[in-house]
Image (tube, rainbow, N blue to C red):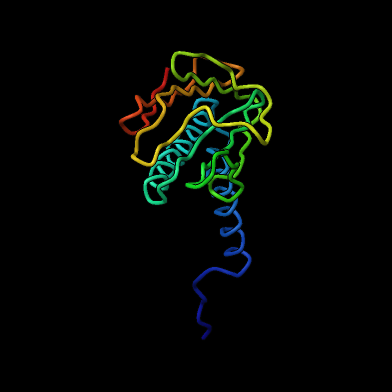
Length: 169
């Protein structure tokens, strides 16, 4: 008398694993092709964290830190050493120079002045926004604007005394 085998063959199991892998790949890759607003929001969140870290670092190191952005959307971080008189550009992570994704403009407003980035930054430049060692900062409004739909812009702002806040315009 022969016993009948119950169960799945190896080929059937491999087909099921392949189907699950394809479905997971599609599911996980779909959010990566995000909307312009989502990408602008991610960049704003990244900057908000860096602004908070700059405030903390300024307090801990008793040094002033700065932020500037140029016409191309490249932003840079600066430090004014305790004994120094000139601003020094920071090259180390997380404060290394960073280029905004292609298709996004940056508008920075400080002290009532509007600018879509400043002129080219050279080594003798200074920052547009300063984070002082007492946790105060230059009041500013930084807007990240998707070039293809400006209505989806995201704004970071600070009055100089409170933390940086993100809002959608």
